[in-house]
Image 1 (cartoon, rainbow, N blue to C red):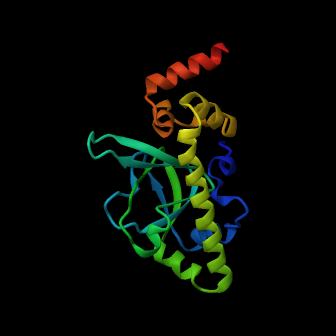
Image 2: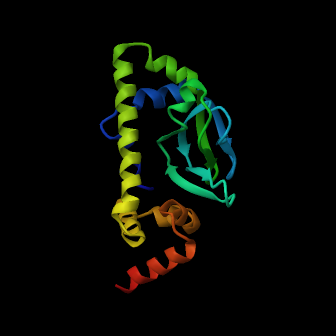
Length: 193
């Protein structure tokens, strides 16, 4: 199993057990096929899902080339959503796609918005969650400038050693913003060291 807390650090110091329990109790249980989308870029974002089994990827489309690039992954025992867009039904910036057969519990983002605005404690939790998401994405963004592709790969496998067994190399390369050929070259160089 991938070390989820280390990869998606938005959960650090934020207790989301209530949301997991809410999704399981009130959500629609669904099995999604590999390639099936939860949200589509350019359409209103609607859902939050607790992932019981499987993983999802966030993708964006390059307008010029038409290629899709992977912006992130979400794994078992985590939540997948275009957050916070799903709270108000804002237009999704990403396509969220099942990377394998996934078992999920889905609720509407508006339900979560109602929960987050129900009292001061929930509003503070929403604030901390948004803050952690921002910090995680900001760090990943600056890592593209701080580290070479080889160092980004090293750091990724140091954080999540099993990621190479869980994800197709093409997806890992896309996440690192390099070609699969460059990733193969990097992996070969590292194995020779």
